[in-house]
Image 1: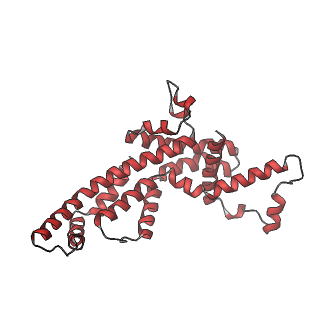
Image 2: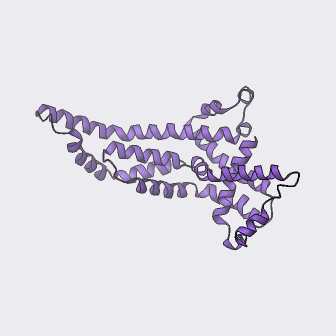
Image 3: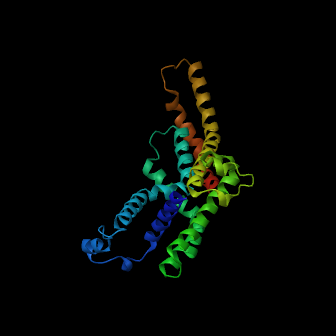
Length: 257
């Protein structure tokens, strides 16, 4: 539970740092930072320093954790599989795919972020609630998003992969009994399952084109001509005529409810 609490604190602090006014930043440069550090010579100073080190370490990986608890995983995997199905090598480039994935993630996660900002970040910045209350409020909304997506995909059984034996053995196990540190990897596995299933359905029409082109080339005796070179224009034409980007992006957005 302590690890779960540290992860939750890191996520909420990362959100707070993104919206906190610059005027609230501590002044005084490095000297001010040194003064804010605990005195290691005090009896509890060494423990506090260790806590600082742990928090800084967790915050360094907080962006990756924040990505893992959002819809970014499903979106970026599906778009990557789409590029592989088209056989267009590095087009669209990685920067475009990641940029589009981040923008789509921002749109999908906007309702959840608004709830976190309303119930956790804003009251904490105004001094109305304590840090622990803000973390609990923000964690609740993030967990609600993850559990909703896991249930919608029918992958609730994935949670048991990451539960300890004593928790998994409970008869009436409910979502609030699942630690956040176990819920996050279960959510990622569920998102990967959904993304690969969507990628499979995207691959099928392009696979048919590849097979038709390869059969035609073999029948014509053009064995030295790469089939992918001939099928690429036809796949691009099919994708454009079907308004593929609208279908793929729209399906991804609607898949989150």
